[in-house]
Image (cartoon, rainbow, N blue to C red; front, side, top):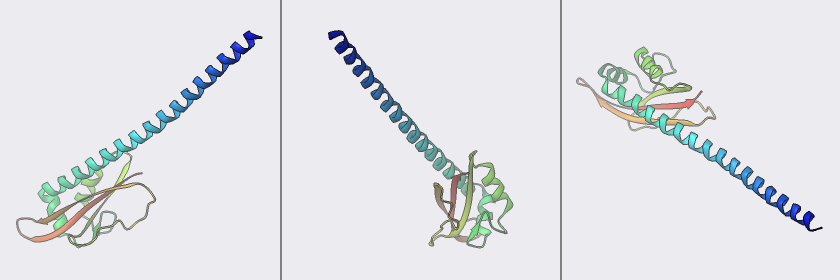
Length: 144
């Protein structure tokens, strides 16, 4: 009789150990997914800033932005090819980015609702050597 009680005790210990191991496994998967999401967000934000700074620093790209009628969108008509190429060349793999040029003092929101997690960054460009024409340049990136 006592041997049966001992076996039941060991079985309970094994069951508790398995339950704890299963819960820890689920927690590790959840933590890993959250960490991956945060890394993706950080890389996207860093790349958005790199794209905007590149346009701000490169004179030909800057002049293209300042010569645009506002508002202008990279997925719209009459958007400069060199800006579209720069954007596509500097977009992370697996993502799509849109570039918007708006008034410096106005809102610059995405026109399309994608129901996705969208990361955006903006920068102000005021002038070049010949003209003063303040613009807000905003990039929106999302996972394709």
